[in-house]
Image (cartoon, rainbow, N blue to C red):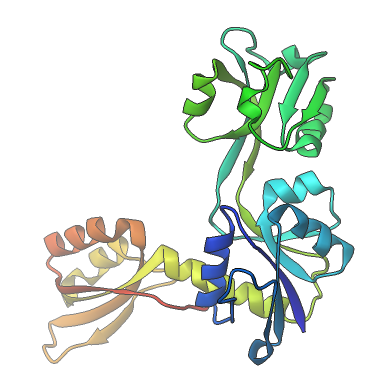
Length: 279
């Protein structure tokens, strides 16, 4: 039985649970449940603190888990990333008082506050910068104003929160993070099935299925607009001068593609959601 760690709360939890549901797995109905067995799929789910998941998987106590790349690297766990899951994106940057720092090297000898001490410490060491890393569990952006640190390293979205604290971003990107599937061993039984299912869910989120009718003479031009993953599926219609086309299209491009096809002469353009896929 494959033992899977799932975030029990936080920004990763809701989407992770939704993906597992869409992949055909049983999930908890009560937020207080810590363990959910799914004998039909020969798996068992353990709902854990996101920060602890890499430790459990790396130790071999659990086989695989969903966590953030940042949490995996910060844990120094033996677990390895096996797949990106396309949600929970975040960017880690340095920030300091406006006008004080412009380059990473200027952090030498100063205090840098962060909730990811190992991750930031490793980055500074690789960069040849000897700074004192101050570990905080939260409210990192207040560390400079409160005199705990000279600079901070934290997740940055728009930078507006940092600006409110009188800080500005500088230096290189520390890490581009997102939710990832991790494993203690690539040989874990059931891992390949889990990966295929989750990839199918991601495809279903990223693509739609588009059907349209088109004059056969315009098929080559239409195929350039909708090449599909491999090639469109083309079927004859009762009218020999027309064909019916079915193809996968990136969800974000749906309306632009429909407009282009209509201008080309396609009609009866229909779009359907994809609920599951194996690519």
